[in-house]
View 1: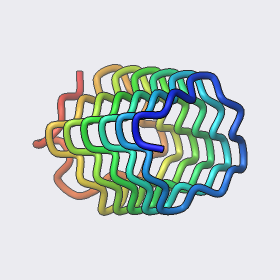
View 2: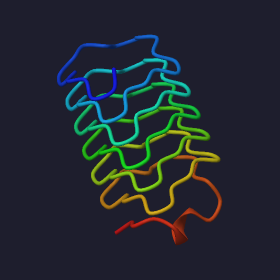
View 3: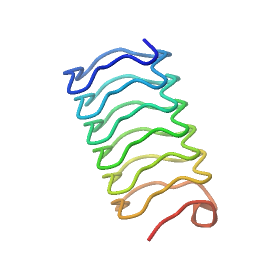
Length: 127
């Protein structure tokens, strides 16, 4: 499903473990409680998507657009978020332990209660 247009799709609770969704358009999609562990979402557009409580552990989200996305309570442990755009995203209470945040943009993101990887301040844009 690489490059698929799933904008606004209702995929709450979907089981998409190891799915290939690189460069897909999931803007505004509801993926709350979805199981996306190990999924390839590199370059995907997830702007304003609802990913609250989603399992994105070990997912590939490099260069993904997650601006304005709701990732509250999401499991992003071990995820590759290098170069991801997370400006204005809600990451409250999310788990980003062991995540790769190199060159990620976290400007205006809500990080309250978020578990962050060690040394994250030196590798991301956060203002």
